[in-house]
Image: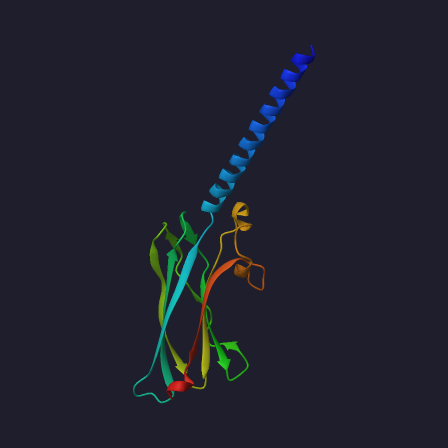
Length: 171
C-alpha cells in the first residue's frame, strides 16, 4: 500500500511539473501574440519655407505629413490634426485653425500621405512649431503595451511628430 501511495505521489508530482511547464510556455506564447498585435506607426513631416515673391514679409511654408505602418497589423487612422503654433514672439498661439489629416487605412509596411498644405505666414511669427498627431485607437488589450510617452496632457494616447521652424534666421 505504501508503494502505491509513493507511485501516485511521484506521478502527481510529475503531472504537476508538466502542467507548470506547459502553463509557462502558453503564457509566453500569449505574451508574444499580444506583442505582435501592438500598433506601430511612424509619422514624418517635411517642412519647407521660402519668401513669397512680390510680397514683403510673407513666407510660404509647405508641410507634407506621411504616415507609415511599421507594425504587423492593419491600422485605421482617424481624427488626425495638424496645428501650427507661433512660439516666438510670445505668447504661443495657434496661427491657423487645426487642419484635418486624411483618414487612412494602412496595411503593414504601407505608407501614405496624410496631408500636403502650403500656408502664408507673416514674418511677425519668428519661430513656429508644426504639430501633427493621430489618436491611437483605444483597444484595451493593447493599451498596456503602449509606451507612456505616447500619452498627451489629456491622457489620450497619440502618435505625433513636431517640427520647429525658425523664420527669422532667413530674413
